Image (cartoon, rainbow, N blue to C red; front, side, top):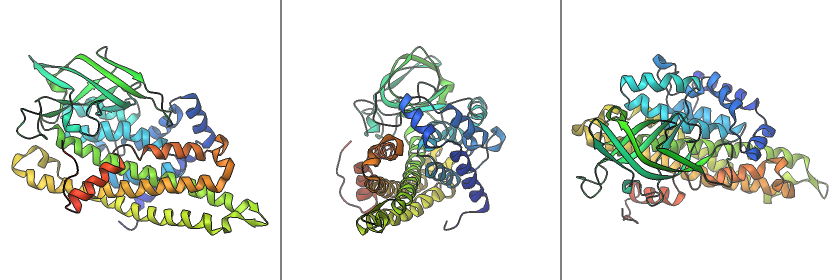
Length: 408
């Protein structure tokens, strides 16, 4: 955990090489034009990153989240969080749950295409009225013969405009009829485009090299074979996606902060005011040093979360009611570390980029220096994949044992 393996070092080196081929000017142009970074995505596929988590028999590399966070951090540290964003949408939302919970037919259908870069994915989770309260999901899948008919609305769904597959979160049992609130949710694999699934882009503050959309689902018909895992057990499988998403946010925050700090330090050595380099001023030194130190601590927690995910969690326990206690204990270990890593990484990444902008002064506000773009990007991580406040609620309740501060 304290030192990378030789394979992980090679992954980090490869990620750095890929990112270096796409300089700041490339991302600046994609952001301003609102274009998908297609050349970068193809480079990710060619280097094997889109199959990093996937089994070798389906064209992947067979690695775990430990290797994925290493790759994500290095991609971010050398080019911004675009690499993390694309890997989350397709590999974390699509490849990871399919490889862990899909049947043989589903694996053969999707995984080779994901690994090659031919199939992009998205996840339709958040809803206008449910928001963070996922258990109150209103999108409903009604059984009709050997099909399910699905209706509902989703919001802030990234990548749906390009995706060929969607991980769709639904309820198959109304919450007031379920034995417990966490039961009755089901995940479906939906092929796109589909005339029953309509999307509309949401203009947003940053990360415009990927569209984020509102989605309406009207009488979508899918076969029963489109269910991922087991009917009504989707909540537990969803947690197994959300925790890696939080690790990914931590990796993007840590890498993005490394990028901003590195550029700020370099500039601070060159820029002189009153005959002294501004890097000698403690008013700039201390905030960057403090943020960097905290980010190094967050990195250890992120890597612990990835290690727990790879080694402590047994997929078969999700499906076996007799092992539900062991499963929930494993979920808690992973969730504890993932939430703490996300909170500390994001808060200190925001601090690091803020002070990097201060180092650049007025130039930090100019697009040509890119710091303002990194600022816009990192601030999204305060809101997603979970708000800082909800992550702190989790830490207070589930780790510290304090009374619950909200009700579902």
